[in-house]
Amino acid sequence: MRKQITLLAAAVFALQTVGAADAPPSTRPVPRFIEETDTAGLQSRFEGQDEFMVGGGVAVFDCDSDGLPEVYITGGVNKAKFYRNKSARGGALKLQEQRSGLELTNATGAYPIDIDGDGNADLVVLRVGEVEVFRGLGQCKFERANAQWNIPASNDWHTAFSATWEKGSSMPTLAIGSYYDRSRPDFPWGTCTPAMLLRPDASGKRYAAPELLQPSYCALSMLFSDWNRSGEASLRVANDREYYKGGQEQLWKVAPGLPAKQYTEADGWKRLQVWGMGIASHDIDGDGYPEVFITSMADNKFQKLQGDAKNPSYIDQAYKRGITAHRPYVGGDIHPSTAWHAQFADVNNDGLSDLFIVKGNVSTMPDFAILDPNDLLLGEADGHFTQVGQQAGVASFRRGRGGMLADLNGDGLLDMVVVNRLDKAQLWRNLGAGTADKPQAMGHWLQLRLQQAGGNRDAVGAWVEVDLGGKIIREELTIGGGHASGHLGWMHFGLGESRDAK
Image (cartoon, rainbow, N blue to C red; front, side, top):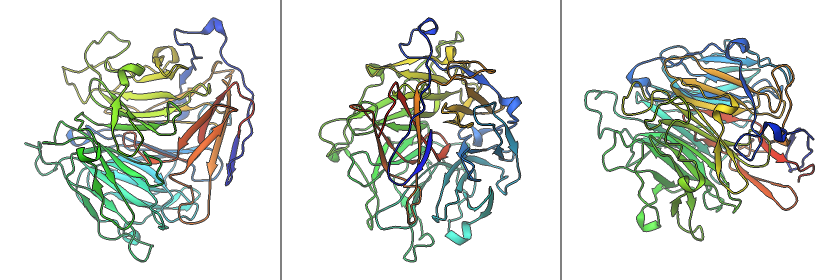
């Protein structure tokens, strides 16, 4: 059941799970997905050569207030496409391409956000070239707002985005990351261009001059998150070691009224160098603090906060949890994987968070897997994860980049969108325990949408706790992370067998 709320309250759908006869090696019920790319009307391709080897994002958000999210997919050198969601509730997915004013070329990523607090979703579109920011007008119409909000013009290669509301501000602080210097394609190593913060000026209605984040190390993902539950979000940045010199993963302290400050070893931060491409954050172990998953080439990282949360000191638990996801699990290719978008969500409504990872070779790199299927890892009760991508029907061998899990037809089951490089985007409907003709939902579930007065209308940065009578599920409402892909709207909670929640 969905409920739009200011104070948290809940009602629950009582649904059925997979029977024991269907159980795979995972101890949890495996959802069944069916690809509906063509029948749904999704016709998008992310094309382009070197400047489009990264990026390829999707934005999912409701802009007509019907409760079902629309889909916007970047196209690289092709025009980006906006799709109105015409799906019947609980039925087959149907998307209708519609002109919206968002048909941009050179688009690499997109993130929905309500910048002006008017109740209409706005959209930040990352590009190879100038970032474009669009103000939502309602009913899925948009107008360019770069001049109105004083968004700086830059010809950089923009690859990452996140946003937060600093205390006392009616407009969000925007973080925009970029890749290497486009003017030096023959020798790009060591040319990472600076990321920037856009903070509201004194008027509170437009942005001041950008604050450069230096040093910057070729960001491919950013996420504002309250890592220590202090009430103040810091900026996590995933950086690509392929092109930086002396760089690392980063965490920036962003305190109101002060310049951003990078955490260092003196603060407890441990130096980490990976091909950072995507970020996913979630409180997996229920201790009240978010763990962080970072995608890379070969093994991925799963970082858990150590100690008393006074310092940002993390240990890696990817191997312990079974989510290094470092090689393909089907297809016969034994080379290391290349991971991009990542997202924690409950795809089988059992009350345990699962992990979705989009995979794909950069191009045709022979030392890395060419047949590199997307991962779907189910969370187990003991904290481990089990690979079920093949059983679930989502083991695509295309060159994946961005993606999103979202309930596109309002049935309480999270569907899947994947953007592929030099290929068609793909769309899967989650059938739960059923079939295409007769879907069968799994577990009980709850969807919430937060609203509040003021500029931060969607309560970005809020922590939601769902109490199942002894077990508490926590989720932080954030904008950013993943790989070039954003979501704004319903928060989804699987409740397992619990019939009551608060």
